Image (cartoon, rainbow, N blue to C red; front, side, top):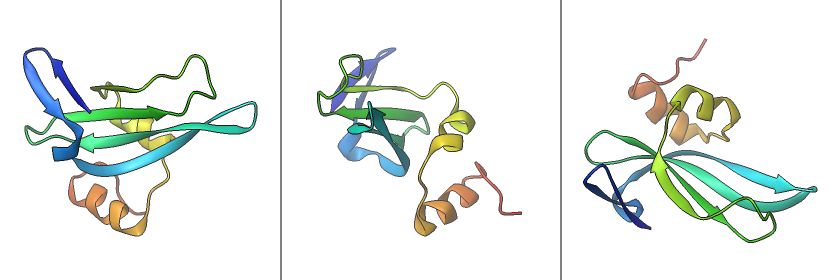
Length: 92
């Protein structure tokens, strides 16, 4: 997905995927939101909706709170290692 935000053109295909979480509506899968790292260091959220939730739409936007996003995210071992490397989480 491509979008212009504050004069910067972002393409989600050129971003690094860091984590994601699924959305559910009435118990049914309705889409996924992914945390991305853009080339300029900006964190983005990309939502891919499947139409099951009338309020959830496809979008690409600046992530306002990375820590809050990570509280809900599903994180693989590889993503966890990268998030530690970026200083976004620490293993305790």
